[in-house]
Image (cartoon, rainbow, N blue to C red):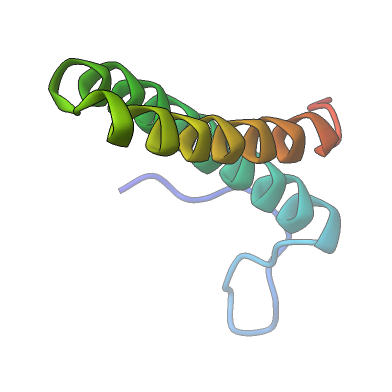
Length: 81
């Protein structure tokens, strides 16, 4: 096993500073939002093939609305540095 670099506390455990933790949480959130966008895209593509005309219009609008909200949340995240 390789030692983990970084400052250590009195027990020898590696300590993470707040800046590192907040950057990691933003990266995880960005990753999760990108996955959700991909899932919504796949559902919209698949649903278009199998739904009836009446159901298709209502559901596609709901999915597009969700896609817009997730995309907006992704765009509001701070840029990686």
